[in-house]
Length: 429
Ligand code: GKR
Ligand code: MG
Image 1: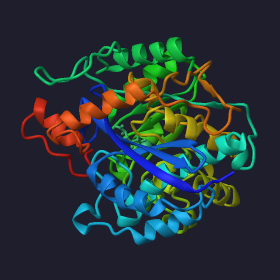
Image 2: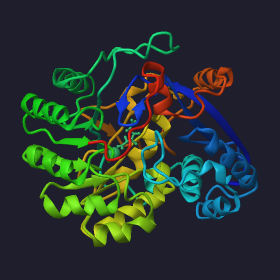
Image 3: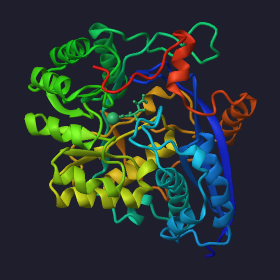
Image 4: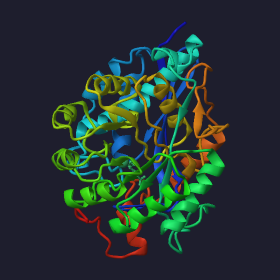
């Protein structure tokens, strides 16, 4: 068996995205993703997926060149390669990432996001070569299915008039009744029993009303609200007070560890984050100050599946819960999330996934949710098959784009409907 990497293919694509609202704006009609393929000397191909904006592509290209000739099993070596790839400083905002909504953007985070795509591709190839599923390479599954939550969004029925887009059949959700209807559809189509509402869009009272309506419509179902740090400490505490009896947790009500620590000190409602704990370096302050009770990992920005396991171990050590965050993604990423989630013993909350919002994919057979869960595949590697025609089609869309959609920018997408829109200063309320 020759596990030498002889070729690496990078295919940027644009994938259809509905008009989902968040505190920064609205999702573009198409979102960039990057599909990574790693080919071994024996002709085995492993696939990975990560963010596809230019700043990631610029790192992924030299990374891919350096990977050739190395062993597909040398996963630790990926971090060494990442250190060798220089990041153009103009790409680093050192401020809250627009669209990604995952804390302050740094060069290291960009590198780790790129590593994650290659790590998953290497694990897929290694698993296929050895005839073992990825979860076995990660130490073995502790569950046969992974539970996901319905990820509810305030949403327009359509993208603004005149904007080229794909149609979706979810309809609008702009008030409590619309949110409940969307949740009903999620439950009917996928069997989800836990619901997360993306907040920070409307004044907090309206979002409180929407969560109350969900609690009434789905009694006993775990509920979460995530305004992506849009509220002051005072507002966060008011929401916690009003929804404390129905919330499983409140996600990033306020921005940053100090503000989250203040909220946490004054409420019994558990706080979760995918914004103030996004790197190992940020753990110490957040845990010492008891700022969060649940960390939402995301292998795309923690640097892959093995780093996700390490994060879970640290959380277990400190008695902090762990679950999974998601951004717009396709089936390769859902498969990767499911494999790693299957190996985490202390996963006690349903994971987030945007997958139901994506009508397009690069897989021949899409992954399915049964009773809100994805079954853990025991097939070699990730257990997914790339569909080359679909990949070509989505790549052609990327080639045809004049560049406007190649960088995800929710504020720019919002300006099409509301000229003059700027991402609101934080706290917004
Ligand atoms: O897709 O609009 C979105 C989400 O708000 C996403 O960008 C966040 O990263 O889902 C994420 C979250 O939980 O904060
Ligand atoms: Mg969040």
